[in-house]
Image (cartoon, rainbow, N blue to C red):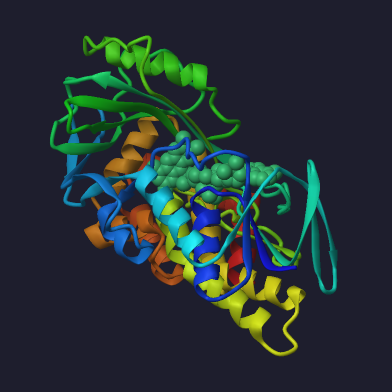
Length: 406
Ligand SMILES: Cc1cc2nc3c(=O)[nH]c(=O)nc-3n(C[C@H](O)[C@H](O)[C@H](O)COP(=O)(O)OP(=O)(O)OC[C@H]3O[C@@H](n4cnc5c(N)ncnc54)[C@H](O)[C@@H]3O)c2cc1C
């Protein structure tokens, strides 16, 4: 019997399996038949690469980042941004798994039964037994359960690679957000352009909803991207690389008493205000592996105890409080129209650099994060301040207070 079965060979699954293998834990990593191929392309802040062990996997680096606030107003952020070389990262994680004896298993999980000594995971064609199961099967997890309330929001995006240059997209800078929406067809939620000028002269352009509920359909985003490009004299080619993005954000944290430990998207680790997950997940893999290896290797250690230790390592009290604050921030964004969203980001990026960096990075302790949020509130124009305060008066405010006190 395996010590740990990791479900999923995305970034989370492979990082967890490699870290467990490196600690001498008998680990198997399960995913669909065939070579590991990740569909998404990952971006990250350059200053987050170190803790995530990503420094050697940079495909391209932009030394500065731009935020467009409409009407030609722009902020240049002195913060470098990178695109991660996903293929080399996947190869490296697979190689670390192989080197440490992690067993590769192919199949699709359909269910699991748990007993005191371990779990039996049912596959479409067979079963696997392990003392503990780590579910890293992404945003629609195979086994991890989460309550339906508070409800999630959804980041959706439609992206494509076009021939450059794209007027308005500066060649040497990553455009994090361009909120100008003049001349675009309607959308149920504000959208922005994310654009990465690539070294070969092409440009990756993506129309993105930071957060919507319900999810803004990809067709709406595609139509807006086409229209946005048309205003700049750029046509979306018929045959070009496309990216379709659907990321659930916020919502309830998974119940830490369940016998399966989640990791990555399956554990709700996505940043509820930005949709980012990669750097945080890779940085957390050693922490998770230490917790599981410690409990499973301890005389008298149990699968139940290991599951508790795993959840506690991923979601310590302060992180749970931060999640509640970010979730509140997400509820605020969900209520803003395009003009208010532009005003929000104008105020946000006018905060001291340490404040907006900390908020976007998910590295500030809850108390400091609350400080950033109150400084933003104080700096916002009066009309926006009323909007920001509204969610505090309803169930979201109650939820926030309850989470902060728990
Ligand atoms: C298009 C897109 C772009 C993104 N861009 C960024 C970005 O730039 N930066 C960032 O930080 N985040 C980004 N994200 C968010 C997040 O980083 C990704 O969703 C990330 O891939 C999640 O990693 P994961 O390993 O948790 O899940 P996944 O990458 O989804 O991997 C899950 C794996 O589990 C397997 N699996 C699923 N169900 C089963 C089952 N029943 N049995 C066996 N195997 C199963 C799947 O085949 C898959 O291999 C993006 C997401 C998307 C969708």
